[in-house]
Image 1: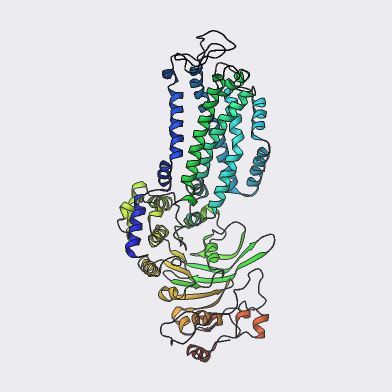
Image 2: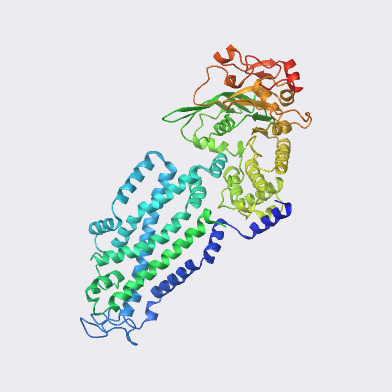
Length: 298
Length: 335
């Protein structure tokens, strides 16, 4: 490389700044991920401003009880449900619950998983073996069955369901972080940090964690999508939040599944909301993965 | 009393299947301000020795022997005590500057972390000192570059940052493990010049570990030649280059291209491969590759003994001066 070329390269790299800022700029260039972000932002806005988006209360009857309720009209965009409630209002308010469940359960799984994964990856030895065998045990049970079992034990409240779905995610996060830390703990910069007298906890928190967290962030996005599906699934099999006043997409599907032949709208709208939100999260997750993965760097 | 004294250092890596005898009885003294070279090929135990002195070998390494700093034994120190010495009294520069800096932290953050820990500086003091250090190791526009990340620096500049971190607390011993191996030749010279100048002005003692005899020739007062985890020859650097006595040293010197050699003269590589380190040798570790090996070499391990003042060799049959002259003229060699 000529000196001029070397200098040009140096200048060019000077523009960018920071590993994560680079990743962010790559993410912004990813069209699919941006579509996901837009859709997700719309869902978040819908959840936050639900009362502004519909003048109907999701729990107040505005039409007649009917086994065969009316479909979408200009007045009721998504039609009415069998109890005569505005279905648009119910789907919009349902966003709140789904997003809440996604965020909280991932937060639960992430925090537990991070602690366990960091302990296992940093201390190795028997700590590692004990934690990881426990995680293997949890992974051996199908996730949905595990969630059902946990809800059965913990009870059917909203909070319990979020905990259950979160716990199902713990081994995934723990394994991911542990593997990532193992890959980083033998690196030169960790050795160099030790040679400067950096204590163990600082090595873990300032050197290992920031360098190991990227794949976990990607996984968190994808886990939010599965959490929404899992809660919908739990509701569908009758283990959803006990309070029937919470409009919840999964329960709407379950309640109306037997009306599929007459009132398609009762299944279509909540089903579509689930698919759309999960798709958005998956697009973002994949985009993040591509943006962060060093192997895919240009 | 020497500043740093290493006595009979052994390092072994034991796994279920086998044991690697990485360092087998290394001893040396380092005086204040001295520059010491340790030369050897890959796998001879140079880096392992330096990591053992720093106490940062991976768990599972068995280290025996004694390392004293100002007469204080380091091997028996507790972890926290040793951490107070690392980076403050003894610091280290590593081989590959591309991977030795944390990619997600700014250079300023990594540099100030050392200062704040060891010298109890507050944020602003550490920042000013970091700027001074970067300036000291020759990084232009130091204040602006504090907020830059490692990937925004070139290899040579990163190695300067590593050196700045190592000298931040004015350590009395600086161990540089192949500090120029990963760099371009022109940058190598700059980094070596920087090290030499720092050692001279800051009164630091330097242990320079390298496989490159040319690097040692430029900087070090004394040189130890290492083979298979032990020193085989040690002398003042000028003496070592003028009158090498161990066949391995002779071989190393002959395998370096020389500008003053006749055009037709071929390089003389050392035949054979480095010793497999999974067992301790019965005799001289170099015997299988040595033209001068005697029966004694195969059966008894040679100790370092003084053959001239300040010149010690671990060999049963050192290369005689006369033969050296013949080799130098290009008549010898060619097995």
